[in-house]
Length: 132
Image (cartoon, rainbow, N blue to C red; front, side, top):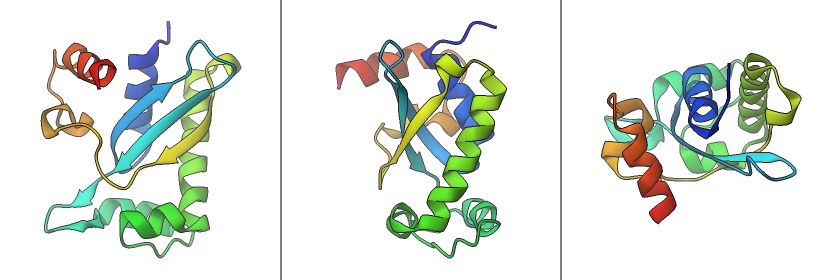
């Protein structure tokens, strides 16, 4: 189908375990990049969600916090492999995400956190993203 920013962001959210927010940038540029934040543990917000730790452990990650994940080679490998799955799903080399930047905390307010987004909110999230 047609892939725009929202479709690419949705594919990242659906494919990459543990991403709580994503913003794709560079759709009209030489390459596409994305900013991602990771899901925290509801019981301990500084810690990564157990599902995120379990998925990354398959790549020998021992990161327990977002900061550790950001600095750990094994976790970055997990993320790069997950984004490669997104690029396969999209199927268009011109729309391949080439760079991923992890941020330590969510960069959108809770109503816009992608996993909590309700139908119809995507336009609001887009407006908030561009207004920031």
